[in-house]
Length: 325
Image (cartoon, rainbow, N blue to C red):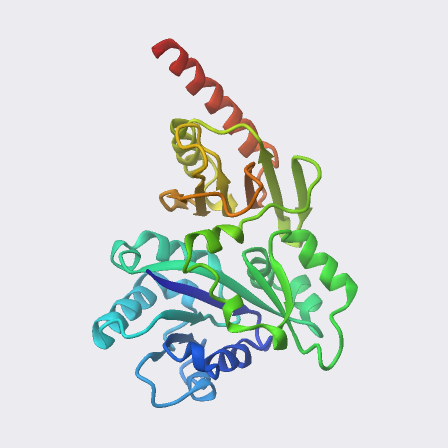
């Protein structure tokens, strides 16, 4: 499978600079790049590289708005034209993009999923202007909320203020925080190995079963930890119920789930709004921690709803299994 990573971040945060540094690394020469610019004249392609058939530009509008046609068509065209002569794909969104619909589209399209798998969402956060962007622009808040890696740029001008660090760390406890200039290419592509990808789903620091953090704009992050494995049927029904009842309010969900019928082989689950990919059953837990860990990035959703829904479905499934048994 070809890993696909997304580099996002608000206008002027430094996405192009980060990608350019990745492409200068000889070990990442076989990287296809899709650049989305909001406007009729595209400049980022020339700022990143030139004369490369595996670097494509989309200038038809904001990628999150045109994603179901332009992005999918571009990926399929790239694969056909180059004969899949690339090892990985980087997508640079415009500064006004919401990464959610992009993830959705990549998860939904069967042709893309046949050869490509979502890897890392890296969000570049401007250390100088990041707080203002978070205060004034919902796009910036969603970009930070959905990140696996938060890369702080412009720290050579001024260190990221503690208030900014506390805000993004509190609202996105699973994200790895790095200085953009210190980001190595491998940090953007951690998922070629299923266990490596699952390791990025590790839970927040030890503590209470539930953790909660609140973004401005009604976005909050809630985490769930449980030691008891879940019947496979309960997981299936729960994901279906989340799709039906949460919809647009569930910006992103990810985690590792212990399954009773498959001891030692957890299911990695990912969801964006009303779209969930099929669980990816791993050959082993990526660490010594074998608890189920799930994180929800929600907007205007009761914080206990996913857990209570899971409890109700699990109880019903166990009662049914007991009757059958």
